[in-house]
Image (cartoon, rainbow, N blue to C red; front, top):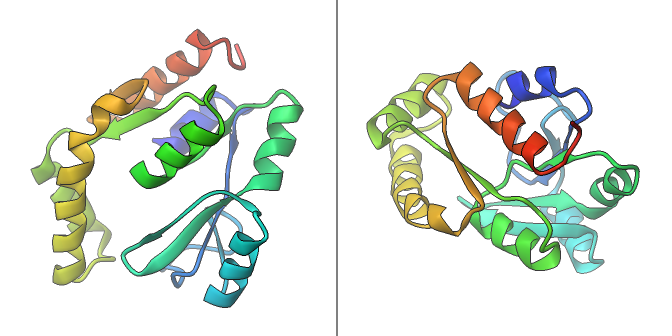
Length: 169
């Protein structure tokens, strides 16, 4: 869905998060994540270099502050792919941020998608599904909800939300 949105709205910048988790097959440094050591991450966090950071499934994730602030200062929209913990921190730090909850069509479909990726062992899949159930309960705290039932339709809806907010029209 994000790839589709970025193709439709090339002025939108995808924030590249830092993480301490190992790269999955097909992931490349700097494309979707910056893979860094735990020590490096903690140092950056302690220096206030993250807009938000959280530990998820035993790995640290964070949104580097400088690139986001740079793009915003230059009039570009920045898309952050973050969880509920991160969204709460971002909204606190930047009340003008527009939060969009991406909802799976169903928990069964989400489970099938995660299994299809082949990146989760049974224990990890169970943890993710439990967390997803809890996350769904928090969707009402977001500004918008987009159901990701069809990639093109959902990315069109997300593009429409950006346009309706006066962003990159």
